[in-house]
Length: 148
Image (cartoon, rainbow, N blue to C red):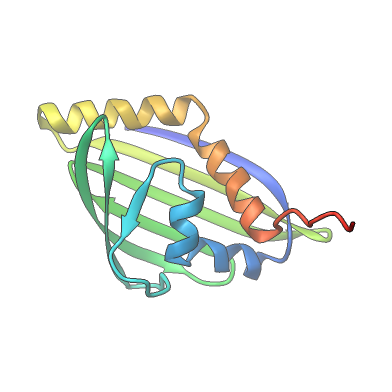
């Protein structure tokens, strides 16, 4: 199993960051991998969601368990052909928020599980988690239009 981590300082309060992290529509926008969430209920501790998308040309689905979701942290576990654990911790830092993010990937075995885990690890090694955090920052504090 591989684990990737990144940190960034974002504009906005931790509650605003977690609001973006727990909004299914926002999740679809900031994720580095295109997917759809069945339903639109906000992610909450103990909740479950079903997500689906395409990786390496194959449609795959995950059952997602929300381990923890509050105004400072989101931790989830996604079970499918591979297991993904993700954790996002937001803490105040000056006028902004320090966001620490980590994602772990583990194959569940079989040819498909190993191939998908390898593809996910390649994406993460190429900076997919950094891309996600940059998109989260854009969701928390979208660029302002210039006045004419």
